[in-house]
Image 1 (tube, rainbow, N blue to C red):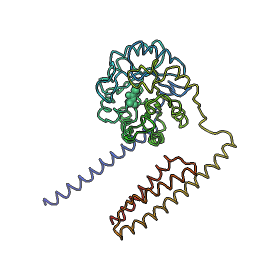
Image 2 (cartoon, helix red, strand yellow):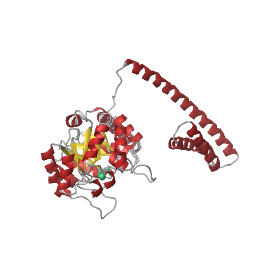
Image 3 (tube, rainbow, N blue to C red):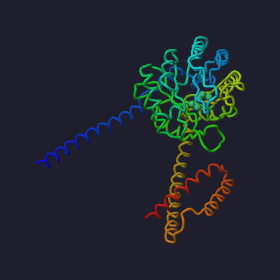
Image 4 (cartoon, rainbow, N blue to C red):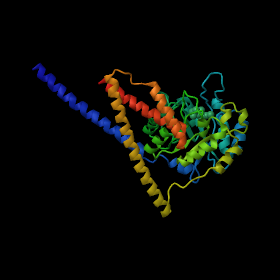
Length: 393
Ligand code: PEP
Ligand code: MN
């Protein structure tokens, strides 16, 4: 009798768990679907109906004069938003960490004098409350904050129902899920004016830029959420002013909808990020030079050619995939021999020889060494994994 009751109890609890589980999964899917399809970009159409969005201004609000002088230089219909850091997350202590609340009235003055919207970074609930109190138009979550789900949630709860625009920078580490998660927290509490900022990712390797662009992560985000505006921050990617224009043009070519570019009336004397800031005059020249290419082809002849070349690309991609698969099959055969003879998977000399050959060949074929190295490293990694699996069998 006791056993029967227990079995029935287990049976019913399974049904309940099954139902709750299904319900939760369904809700999660619904939320994801809504975030992918809901109109989250109306704010952009209002603020920047004619040109790409341009958010410009100093890294930090240093003095009232610096803020006002820089803003005066930026008055132009193509710069719709003025930015300035009021709370500055600095890597090391002892650097200027921003004036905090004291700087907020300066930004109000910029808004009154220039008509530009104002954007600032907020990193906790207290910042959020002050930003709302001073009626800041656009709030952004910095790259060091978007890595922290507790901080993001705290901010989301503090600005819930405010109707403000929220922009979420990519987290410092190259983690798409973490970036999406931060955006979801704002979407979940009902914010409808959302955008994301691609500012590049930290890397332990010294590279050409201060932060590696890792374009693929941003493009994956864009493809998944085409309804969320993607803004490029060339200043924090480049870390130096001489490549801001090229980076911004790249953003336009990849159909980013806007930019955040640091500008200071006297960049060399800036209290933070001096190397990457440009004067307002330089920024306006950069905007003049930017070339907005058409998004779609209308000309039938061009369309025909495009169709022809796209077909060719599809065929080449098919061949590439087949070749890769063949190569892996050969690697597996080698793996079996290594297993029989108890030889280690990694044969460094052989690998050096393959890389050397590929690099030499790449020069003949007009392919960059960096590109070939990346591809061959990925192929080598996959071969090793396949051979490891054979050795473990
Ligand atoms: C900034 O915009 O000044 C800033 C600190 O940016 P990030 O969060 O991208 O480092
Ligand atoms: Mn900065």
